[in-house]
Image (cartoon, rainbow, N blue to C red; front, side, top):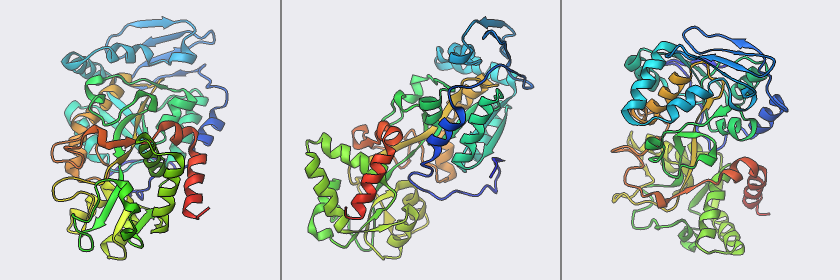
Length: 411
């Protein structure tokens, strides 16, 4: 389906741990050896850029009226580079005030996403700054294809791309630009610039249980304790949760376990478990008391059901949980030829500040990337998080998904 303008009736996608394993192949095939940029694109109220056949870029940036020319830099840096560099170098109130002035001159920002739930954030941004957000929603592979095809054709119609696959555009395709704001990114658990995206939300698969079937006293402190025979027949595992598997593998190896010991642990808990489709299926089975414990249930799915009284939780009454918490960042990237670069940066800043609070208060299924007061990650020390290794997630996904699948099938 084609991306559509978001609205209150946007259908929520099914929660899943990894949605589209073909995205990387698709993006690389579409873009090939490079992007053609010998074109002229002008957007009302935005940065006007002209790329000549000699590789020079002449850019008139909204907000200052000055024209700069950079020879030979079009392929590497992008037409929005000077604007991004200017504001990336600023901090605090100086950055905010300068961005607001420039973004309001641009007058708009174009936001592509695969995640419903952004409406309250977008509405708050528009009301706060009087800047229109053109937000388009679609499937991950569809929007990724649209963006890469646009760049291949020399048309630059997006400022911010938001999806768990957005890192592909920076890591493999090279059509994004770095977002720098340490005052905000330093607050994101496990944030690493090597990931290639700015986390705006986190997927957190964790151990969840039915509170009628399992008491807090029974729940162990760490994942490895589920190898105890008393859990035989009481567990469930998501049959698509290979990123969770890779994170738990790394956690155990970091504790000094050998590969043989890690393999034996997973074989044991698999023998104690039934495999299910996804977090939603496991949650429904826990609520209906068909099983007692799910080992890799998305925290936001649990929280959403617990909020309406379902007998399910992933945290004990004292706030503790089964360690570690695997975390997979999902978020956005700045496009290097963004037609509204100042507004793009301002939107990113807003999402990581006021937007995080709005997401939480709106009750959206999207978890916040920066822990909020009263939020699901409040009070959790960073060392309790085990980030999914980006090399495994992007470059070695076939290997690790195959390993997990073979594990579940007893091979």
